[in-house]
Length: 231
Image 1 (tube, helix red, strand yellow):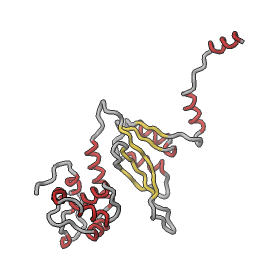
Image 2 (image 1 turned 90 degrees about the horizontal axis):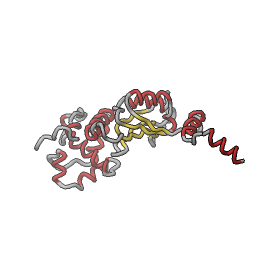
Image 3 (image 1 turned 90 degrees about the vertical axis):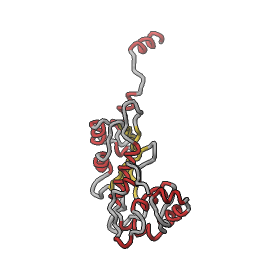
Image 4 (image 1 turned 60 degrees about the vertical axis):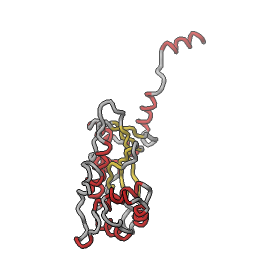
């Protein structure tokens, strides 16, 4: 079998340590993880759906993914993903997506990146709040460039400062809701060569009025004098 070309998904996935014991390695780790990625990109959600998607594919695709025998079933994917480090898996996928997207260059329009938070369903505990994630989403491709958990002792705009450190801001415009319209966040984006486009609502009345004033028609003394003469 030919080795995966440099920069391919399989090459990036091969950097992840295999959590399985030597007795349970019937299939290459990168082949199984690439199947997970491809199946989820096609809408599969859950172990059974991933295995079902893979077994519906042609043998040529199985070989391209790196399988040398009949692909694994649902149980194998479940055991692997439960043992795998989610943080390591996420970082490798983020590096792969950044490689595919490439860095913005001069003359290319600004790359729009949406920053937003979401609470994960089914994560609420009796004495802990539900898991809340803050993500950076490339609007052109729909890829999540980076994401992090918002600690219960902080808030989203503080978490945004840490999340923004994970990507290059030059050549990008960060969009977001009013919660990110904070001086610290805006200054950090500008200082690192980026741009921002945030919503301003009524909870910041002074800022909202200042912005509205910039779009009002300028007053001319001549207009006032003409009106007085006409009257």
